[in-house]
Amino acid sequence: MLAVYSRGPARLSAEEEEFLGALATQGAIAIDNSRLFGELERAKEELEEAYDLTLWGWAKAVELRDQETAGHTQRVTDLTLSLARTLGIPENDLVHVRRGAILHDVGKLGVPDAVLLKPGKLTEEEWAEMKKHPVLAYEWLSRIPFLQRALAIPYAHHEKWDGSGYPRGLKGPEIPLEARIFAVVDVYDALDSDRPYRKAWPRERVLEHVREQAGRHFDPEVAAAFLELLAQGSDPGTVPG
Image (cartoon, rainbow, N blue to C red; front, side, top):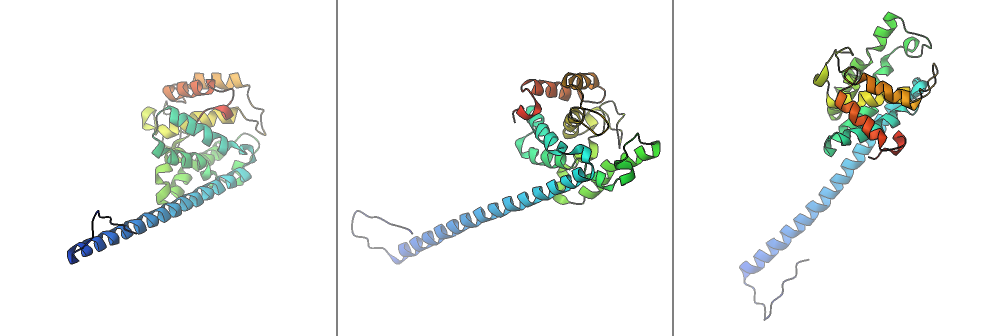
């Protein structure tokens, strides 16, 4: 509704009436556009939520297949986001970090049961098969446009700062920052958790391992930031972020 006020009698010319009519029409169009934009935003949010539920479904499939990692994905995702914020990764990029963390082990769906579920030590051939899972993740996820910016962690989280990692043997800053961040969190959680083949390490031993591997397995600056972050809370569940 458009209301026009005047201190005296209003005698509008045809041109003035036409102008006011056009103004009212433009206002109506603006309101409709605003309503449409709001509906599109809600639809976008619902679609993104559906995407994320799908990703969690894939992650759950990995955990159901590989029982030793139960709960691992949620823990490392939360802690990775906290560390990423500490290291200054922009908020707009955190959605891709989050998706990458959720999908970090999705390539294991392509690893044969005889290798993935083997209780004992892997042979050289079996280990070569296991080391294919980052490449499998890349081959699957790179074909999905909305996940391409989330590829760094699934593809590169087993690379090491000194270049001795896999699958590409990347070294130092060649490794994407997101993957360097996740590598510290992933190893920390693995050692801090009970597994079928061993009990969790004592917390101080895990932290000492992180310190020792700074400059070898881990980016030294990322490892230092991680240790500082943990020092702010009594356990990862209380880390701010």
